[in-house]
Image (cartoon, rainbow, N blue to C red):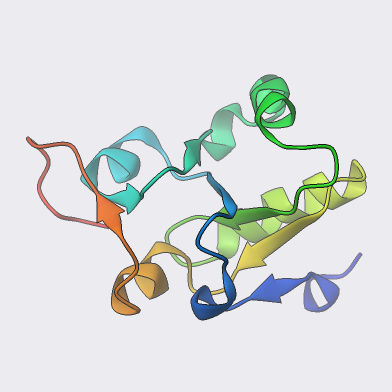
Amino acid sequence: MEFGQLPQVDVASVPQDALLLDVREDDEWEAGRAEGALHIPMSEFVGRLGELTERAGENERIYVLCRVGGRSAQVTQYLRQQGVDAVNVDGGMLAWEAAGRPLTADADSAHVL
């Protein structure tokens, strides 16, 4: 599958109750994240794939996020190769924040998405 063929959606198209997978690293996650997202850093993803499959329903679409969309595109491609219905969220957390979607952060973190 070529990158150009990878399914992507813009932030406005992500349903309120969507299963969000955030693949950013721990420091990025602590600074700010989408409320209710599942956090599995890309660097740990293959080893922790079971956590995602436990949380996802059998045919549930997974919306994959990172900071701007590069890492999430790679994870989306991997998931699709495994037969999982996954889409990349175009623009990542920067677009999420710019669109005014709900965010949460650790109290002691500086705001740096």
